[in-house]
Image (cartoon, rainbow, N blue to C red; front, side):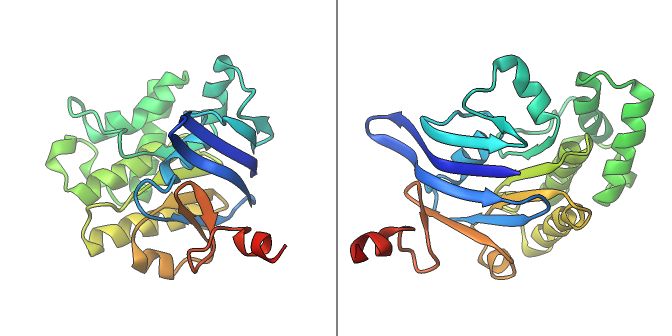
Length: 230
């Protein structure tokens, strides 16, 4: 479903965000991205969503080459993606329900259809009873669960979540993670970046990044040991 082949991303001669990344994510996997701030986790997720393009190498998402996709094709790519990024805040001038309806209205759904699906999405994250509330009336954990509802309302094949539990208390973080795991359990592919050691300890697959490179669990750059042996 997602394949990086020797992908690098360089913003300037002194800023290499990702370096020679090769990895594959299969359909239905739940994958965590780990690494310190600046490791390249956010850049990797943004490239999958075509918010960034590779400087070199090839990235294939659902059969589409991200480096070659035309601007007109990006909205169609993203219809199959649920995006949970820290900079994508809820709109505070409208209700929770209206926030979750928005992705459907943008793609041409009727208001009745959008409201029905938005209510179902809020129900899945346990917030249907807060549908008429304004975002600022919710806790940080509740706002993050609304972001998840908004991300999955279009029934995506892939969810990309960038630090979805950052700055949340443990109980709120667990509820957010439980919501993401529920979507994974019905076949949605999930990539989640996190600093949360408790979350990572329970993960089946963790991809470690450091300074834009893949590293193994000990912090050694992938391929470094083989290179030294050669």
